[in-house]
Image (cartoon, rainbow, N blue to C red; front, top):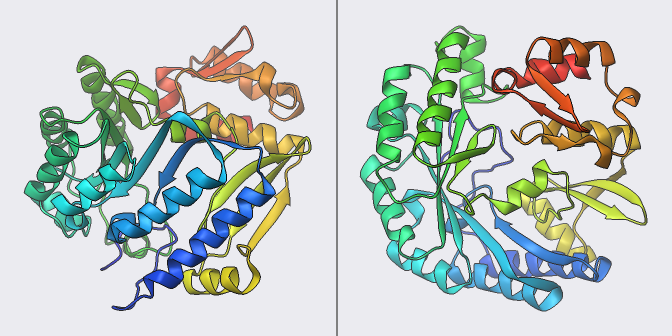
Length: 365
């Protein structure tokens, strides 16, 4: 296994041998800790990822889901997603996931062109990606593909070809992300040294607009800035993030947002996998930092997440009034400029605003 050159996620290169049983017991112990701490919670969605959970044995996934179902009340129509990569999702593996109550898969394609896959450091080919999607469509209720635009050598014309291909295969959801160059990555180091030539901001804006237009024409609605779905196939788990609802993050480097006794807490678990597992097994609890969020912090986070959705956010549900945590002069200027709309307590980004969301948020906050 190797790390993709653009990836800044909490990921590690593992040894050829890993004690799967030890890892499984650590996860089951962590789940049990949270279940005892929050027994009143009702599970509405389960998301296995990021990283590459499809590398795990099916028995590992079975055990995790069995523990969740036995520890909490789980909604009857629970959405259970798993992230898979084409190189680690063969027929036997996918059939096993389908038998584990998983009903949604997100496939890390990243490019539908051979040269794009090489550039992005992917180890599968286009044919393997399409084969994984075709098989998944027969096994799961929803199939999603992740692809990246705005990388070196990319153009509007090439991106148009990729979108055309994506719309010929049996998916109900597409996540289309513009490449973000992060520090401490291979791409980040290359960019710092002037060795990474990227499309211009205008070209990337054109790719964004093309994505919105083509996906909408094909019946895929943009329910978040980078995510498009046929109605009823939106990722309900991710919508919880963007609507600033509670979620429990379990595993190395996992984040959570949990309401407890009229307060909201941010949780962050130990990042190093080996340290995380050993501490869970030693203490019976996941090693984590827990921080109580102020009302202003909660309001800012809710704004940052909510404006990613074209529907916007209901300001009456925020813990503070807008004038208590945003610059009202900037808000009015952005409304006047056609980048934001604010009426009936709903604040949302316009189509022009969604293309410039990061600078808009900087202005507001």
